[in-house]
Amino acid sequence: MILELADFRIHAGQQAAFEKAIELGLSTVACKAKGYRGAKVNRCIENPERFVLQIFWDNLEDHTVGFRESALFTEWRAIVGPFFAAPPHVEHFELTYASA
Image 1 (cartoon, rainbow, N blue to C red):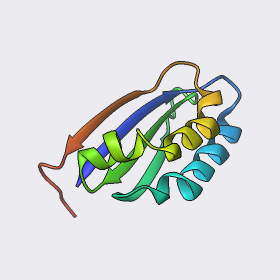
Image 2 (image 1 turned 90 degrees about the horizontal axis):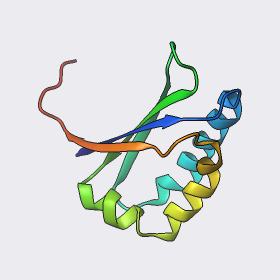
Image 3 (image 1 turned 45 degrees about the vertical axis):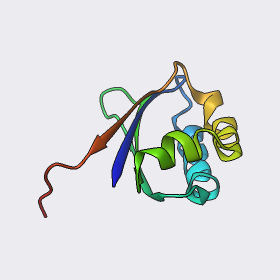
Image 4 (image 1 turned 135 degrees about the vertical axis):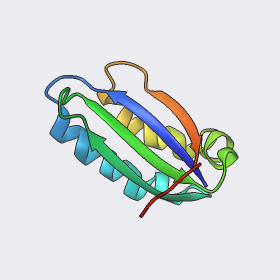
């Protein structure tokens, strides 16, 4: 399983609207992508315009090819993209250790 981390900076004062939009985008669009296994969204306490999205994928290509090169990605960006104050920073991770 692959973890995608996306770091978003949104326009000031748009936190509540962004939270609704990202929930909508995940629950109606991203969830339809092959290999999608779930997501978590966290808002930064010190900087409330910063959000970190965690999406779990079966493999890297499910995100980088299957989702990013599909119509679903266009639909996803139409929902969340208007809130971005800067382009998101996205990286992928492999699990090396887990504790209960």
